[in-house]
Structure formats: structure tokens, C-alpha cells
Image (cartoon, rainbow, N blue to C red; front, side, top):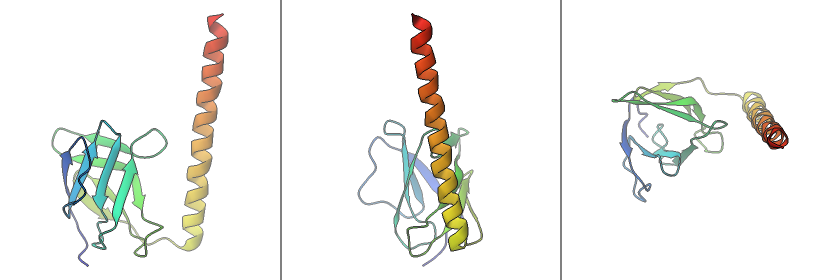
Length: 128
């Protein structure tokens, strides 16, 4: 297994079945970015693009994904950021850090959608 320190990106409509190592496939239509794990293990990494998952930035030349990519369900448990087509490696997290991170993500999603539902209710009420 060879760890990657950079990637390139391709904008596609559909993610190909045979993914090339080091390529992040971005489907705007399906709001998803997919690549093989940057540690070299070959696992498929899917990063849904949404306000509560990942954000993609394209500066005209490179892409960045935020937040970091923590592959906690993979044996490798790799953890990295993709910033301007470069892979920035993060320290390995402990089981406690992983559990805490998952709880925070779950809480943040619930809070986001609770606010969205509240705003939708207010919008409906104000229309009358």
C-alpha cells in the first residue's frame, strides 16, 4: 500500500465502476465525490456533498473537501483532508475520538434539520 500525497479530480455525471487510483470523481448532478482511499487500501470512499456532510470547493484548478475524511469503518482507519488536490494526513484517532466525532456529526445533523423544519413551519405560518 502506497499512501498518496496528491490527487487529481474529474467532474463526471456518473461515478465509474473502475476507479483510477488518485482520482476524485465529482458528480455535481448527484452531489457526490468518490475516490479510492488515499492510504492505498483500495476501499471506495464516498463523500456526499450537502450542508451536513462534505462541502466541495473548486477554485477553477483544484478541489478541496471539508471536513476531513475519516475512514473509521475501514481496517486502515485512515484520516486526511483533501485541500487543493493535495492530501494532508491527520494523526490516527483513538476509538474514543472516533465515537466522539460520530456523536458530534449526529448531533450537528439533527440540529441542522431541526432548524430547517422550524424555518419551514414559520414560512408556512407566515404565508397565511
